[in-house]
Length: 343
Image 1 (cartoon, rainbow, N blue to C red):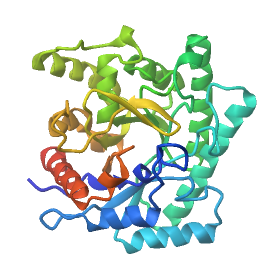
Image 2 (image 1 turned 90 degrees about the vertical axis):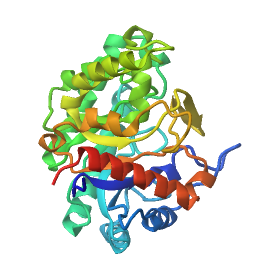
Image 3 (image 1 turned 45 degrees about the vertical axis):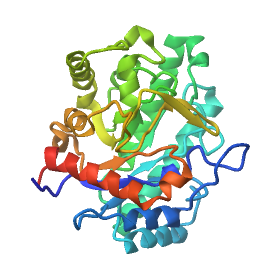
Image 4 (image 1 turned 90 degrees about the horizontal axis):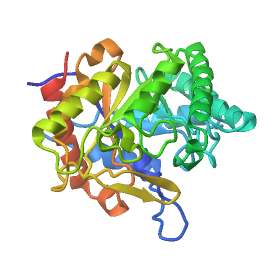
């Protein structure tokens, strides 16, 4: 059955994350090239309808002038795309710094959120952006430092996120915290829920669920104490665990990434190891993408979700440059919308 919602978006950051000029790194893929690859995809007359967008170099200078940002908006619109969710440059080495760091580090984190809100406002005013959120995380790679004082560090993250949510709310935006095993304090479904409930501002701060990352939540990869599954689990055990996790996090979920995972972790460049994104048709994929998506998209319109995004973070460049990669992804996303969409 064909539906008009959710709109189907492709992420631009696979051209950036894990790329660079360091040893064993592949070069970044330009925004223009990522747009062209996305625009070329087509399945039975259906094309991608928008993009989600990382607000940092080399794709975008987060301090760019309004004229430059409007030029970028024009370029995106000329491809027939809307802009959906934006990724704030909250990490050390970009604009921001650790949300559980010292006062200066946390101030940088909030500066990154302010910059993202400014750009969102320009895109909204332009008309290229009409929905979506601003994505954040704790910007603290790995969990070793967090483990030195779990309660104190989580308290700092909650306070930083609360201040960030107030900034977003003042700009008419919502933040979505990405659950991923590499982000300190957010590295299990229970710790993630603790932060969301601790901030307690669902109108301004919610959860961004990614199928690849939340699979490793089930396995308790960085938090064995919160594992819901063990290796060798049965199909019945999987779906019972999946329902338990999604029932807790779905009410907070305001942004959703379709993805595949083979049960491994993966890292590239300066991005710490996290859930491995796999091609949509990867024979080693652990997930029934369409069925799993339904658990997250139940009642999605009531939570303000208007689009979904494919995340192929840290795919090799050869995979990203292959047109069939995008057609296969688009086909799977159409299947998700056919099964769980709305009008």
